Amino acid sequence: MLLPLSALFVLAPLSGQTLKVYSEFRRVDAGGEIIAADQGGRPREILSPAMARNAFGSLRLVVTSPPGQPFTLYIGQNPENVLTPTVYRELIAGGVADRLEPVKLPYTYQPRSRREPSVQSFWLDLWTPETAPVKRIRVEAQLYANERWIIYPMEVRVIATTIPGGKPPSSALPPASRPADESAAAPLREFLCGEKPRGAPEGPLTIRKLIRRNALQDLLLARSLELTHGRDKVLAGVLNALGAADPQAWCAAPPARDAFGPEWYLKVRDFLYRGPF
Image (tube, rainbow, N blue to C red; front, side, top):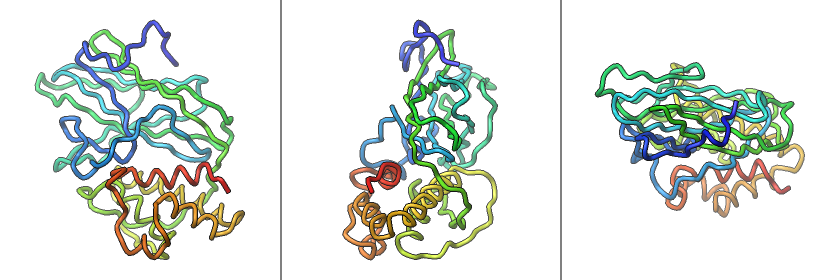
């Protein structure tokens, strides 16, 4: 449920709390700063993300508050019950967030002491069913703290693109210390370079695993587009998004991260979602 406009306080700096939203490729440290491995370029502004149907879309919510200050996190949408939100608390180990702990909405963070860390990051999954109407859905991350509401509003665009069913082979995951985009780059290399998936034990739920899941969704879409439009056309669009002349050139070199940081991969997703074909 969305709050009335009179209750909205976006970012509310005077209350001591902030609420920020990042893409799945920008992990933060215990101080709320993007970790060195995921820096580079300007972080993508999350205002009107596109969501394909029959698929997950993922965002990162970062709450900063004074030490010892409790808060409650809500996810609101209008119309209600179009998207299914699932929230995980990101756990930091060795300076890197990776393990995920599911939390129930609304989620209340109650520090155990006045010195409890003041930054909490959350992974937000938004599931869009195949039957979802093609329209804009107002989605809000809502934070209640210190008797104030802090709101981050988004206008989620449910698009006509529908991810086909299927479960492609899972790629091996890079170490958690590596840049977040590497978990998406491995499936993309299988598509562009003909590399074979290297299976690995599944283990616990992690950020890397869900980034890989999202990339595998994209590749299911890419392969379905090949059936309709031909591999050459799909391949040309993906390479154009990557700024690459040919598959061999891209496969022989690491992704260009200077202008977009780890979010270079989102250009590929943008192309697959919108075409044109």
